[in-house]
Image 1 (cartoon, one colour):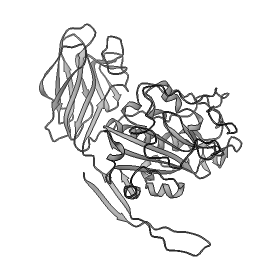
Image 2 (tube, helix red, strand yellow; image 1 turned 90 degrees about the horizontal axis):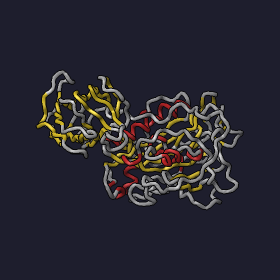
Image 3 (cartoon, one colour; image 1 turned 45 degrees about the vertical axis):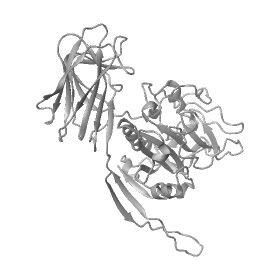
Image 4 (cartoon, one colour; image 1 turned 90 degrees about the vertical axis):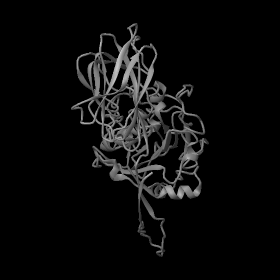
Amino acid sequence: MKKIILYSLVLLSISSCTKKTDVIESPTIVFQYISPNYLIKEDFEMGKKTAYAIGDVAIKTGSWSFDDALLGQLAADIKKDSQSVRLRTGKISMNFDIDSITMIKINHAQYGNDAVSVLSLWISDDQGATYTQLGNPMSTNSKSFITDSFNITSLKKVRFQIRKTGTTRVNIDDIIFIGKGKPNIVFFEPVDNILDTTGYNSNPAAGRGTPSGNGIDVPPADGDNSNMLFGNPSNASTNSIQIENYLIDQKYYVQSYSSSRGTPNWVSWHLDATSTGSTSRLDNFANFTGLPTGYYQVLSNSYSGSGFDRGHNCPSGDRTSSIEANSSTFLMTNMIPQAPNNNQKTWATLESYLRAEVQKGNEVYVIMGSYGKGGTGTNGFAETINLGKVVVPNRVWKVAIILPNGNGDLSRVNANTRILAIDTPNENTIDADWKKYITTVDAIEKVTKYDLLSKLPLDLQKTLQVKFYIP
């Protein structure tokens, strides 16, 4: 693994009426990661194309040209999830290049009761000007998926085309790209935080309690892939006396909640390929009825007219594996009053970036929170909304631990693990580029007093906490 490490001293200025003392800070490490390998799956779940006529479609890996092909959802379509490519007499082609690829895998099957077909894979290293057939033709002779693999030896950026002749139809799904280095493609991940209007000025929706947690998509309570694998940052408790640090397990994420602020202190969750699916954004905002007696319940319309969005901590887009998963993210205990441009631009693109990392074969542990009092929305500056019952945070932060897919996650964390830390102002004048707000875990811990990586060995914590990870 290549990395660039620059050491710099952090100067701390302290204004106080007490005697000034010398403070020695740990050096900050600037860390730029170059991915050693990648595995990218195009599952064809994102796009929509219902006719065979030639046309481009935007899907997760980029823009593809479909010629005599569509995205099929019929019972006769063989598919891994909700849809797959149905190719007749034509071809599907990438409109983009991928770099550093060593292998491509293609899953294909006979459509419905159609006869056996033959596919061929073609490769171009001149941006689609010319193509050369790669390997032997693929015989589609099964009504369940067959996987064909092709080794790639070209050192150039390349793009692929899958061709078919004859009038029979085939289904294609889950094309896998494997490589070493950076693929240098831009993922078309859907942006989660759309304009917050649905039900915003209406009467409050009916409240909901804790999700049942019976679904197969619910993360485990502990161990690998659990929502709080890296620790309980504030030692939150399920004792209702802890009104400012009350622990809530919402099954699809875990959070510490402040009754006086009406917002979470922090929310922690795990994100991997099983977290996302075909469930659409539900927009079913609701108050959480599971709060202890005496806690104020923020309603679905409590932010109405405030100039702030109902900003998710655990995003809707990170929980699309089921209706219950997505619905859990719309509980008002998962919301903060967030400046619209922070929510819809800066934060939304950060969330999409992390989901794109999952598409590359990674899993991500995320902790998000906010602190301070007072932000600036479309109506100007405000410290509170909802008649003073909901505090507007001054800053919004996130820490993401990015690991290649695998097991024994805590034991796999080392000094080279990518940890992204972001701390943004809750202002509508915020820059849309979240990379301008990169900071360190150490800096966030200092202002929040949280211990964000408490399950790691102390020496490793110290190493990781002072790193600036620059994607």
